[in-house]
Length: 410
Image (cartoon, rainbow, N blue to C red; front, side, top):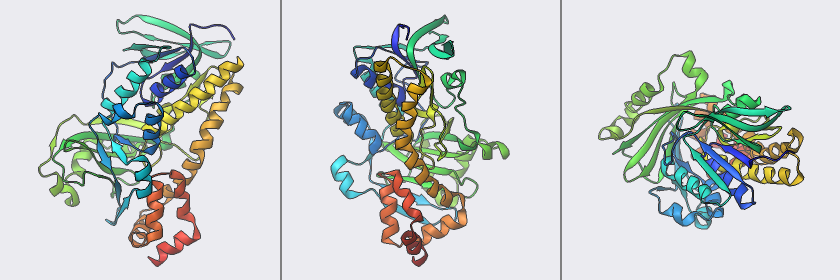
């Protein structure tokens, strides 16, 4: 393996990229961390931080700094069906006692926390406002990246391994030979911040509405009386019906069940739109000769739960461990780096397959309505729903005969 300027180049300094750079540095690897923006920068997102996320924040030694950020504790989730039935799900009390609640924190603040943590590491070099256009290859292996710096100059950087942490449209993935967008799994989302929304500040809301399902309309309290309000739905549906996500968001707020709650609300941000490919029960490659993909570039976001930050950070850590092992072996071939694919799939595979069960319910409104209407009255169903909030694999229990019987019996 030829020598390179850096052990690893990480393209994208969001949660996945900064986490990956952080753990690579802790392992003694030299890292070049690139991002097209200058931090702190906003990122359109629902802002939820689950236990997957907070566990890694603690492991990175950032818990005290995290607690200084403006945020909102979350203790429950509220779901509503196209037929108007609701299920309020408290997070597991025992788990809250051990690990604390979930939190909603603005991405502008949280991502900056992770970026600064990575930047402070001795073996990490950062270049902000550098746009990566694609990878460089030699003899079929990725050996670096090319792009444009803040002064408009074309530049190239070389490394033994390149990490694509550059989002759902990942230039690294595309130029390395992997299409990051999976059309049938791609979602289009619109989000804005509002002051004065009437809501329970400790509860996130996901409303699966007619005309939106299998997507959802959300209300997530974030801090100081401000809520993150948004809508997400399949991109194929958006295009087929020529929808404007921004217009749809404002229209949903005026539905009878929400109108009074937004009566005194004031929008305090632009309405941003972004797209992401959510995870699937079908495995896809996330590495190759000289490169790996993490976060949204690897389709790490959890389907219909909407969580992206925690899974992105988790993929970044797993990638760092796999890359370190490959470098120690002196082998960054596609076969060697496939250890990352295997390690990641061992974690997300069971989650994605379990969440496919929940996806079935949501994609079938009549079944979804019936299950929530009946299940809301049954302690077993409530327990399973609560457990899903701490471990997505519990969604598989929705297919258990005992659970189906509980739903039928109400």
